[in-house]
Length: 375
Ligand code: GLA
Image (cartoon, rainbow, N blue to C red; front, side, top):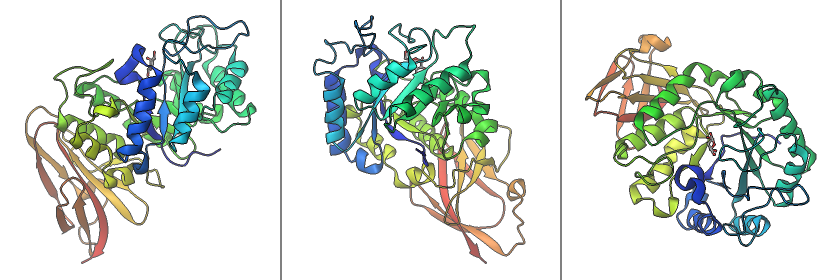
């Protein structure tokens, strides 16, 4: 199975953490259909940690907690599938999961079969409580083999937080995406630290195996497991979402989508940003402006001869971000210019064939999709 585009969907962890249950999953699936999120491309509904009983059953299998999931996982997965969505679950390469539930170390083939029996289409595979004497590459390879051996197509989402230079071996290990950083929280600084840490590593992300900078915090509004009231507003969500799309990231919503404000629903379904995220060429962005001042700009090739020119103000004060054509080797005398359209406002600019500067509020951004035009 090849995954050509970064997966899109929802994951329970950021908001629900320990409080995940069947009703939340069903209502989330319902809402993803009603709201148009599914039709916008969000297809995976993923249950993270904390769904199981602390002990395995007599047959050695993981047992879903009957208080949280009274209908059982197969019925829930059938429900999710009946909505035209795909069903995802979670396990871990260590001896216990991060929240200390049963985990798949040395039980890979049994657990993979259990997930396949439940109709799972996507497995997030964490890294807590991994024996210091064991080999991470072997553990991820083994689970990839186990998933394939079930005969079911299951997206394998590795999550070892970027450790052991994961980007260098995870593609051969058989994963379809790999978490490249520690956990996100609902803080703008976390968004920036995560994103900046991956700039040089984005070259490893391509169809078949994608870099994963963690689930979105867009629209969490301070609620839930990794929520921090008051630390992110609409501007921070906008810039976070734009950065994830610019970097061709998996888009796994982390909010309680049933309670998304209309502005946040609009942001998650911005057609131009999703087009950028899902672009089939999957090219990483490059720096196009000044590299100091915390106000970078990026250029990124897209398919269909289009491109992105995106300007950011990561600083806490207003300021300008700029485009320096020479930084990307664009000759101002080439006889060509850039026709630009901003993806949030629809503003049209151009043709641009020289230095360009954009004033931005703190933490804000603007993102243009561009086309070349003869002057
Ligand atoms: C780790 C992962 C998170 C989440 C939790 C669950 O911290 O990085 O994304 O899955 O475990 O316990």
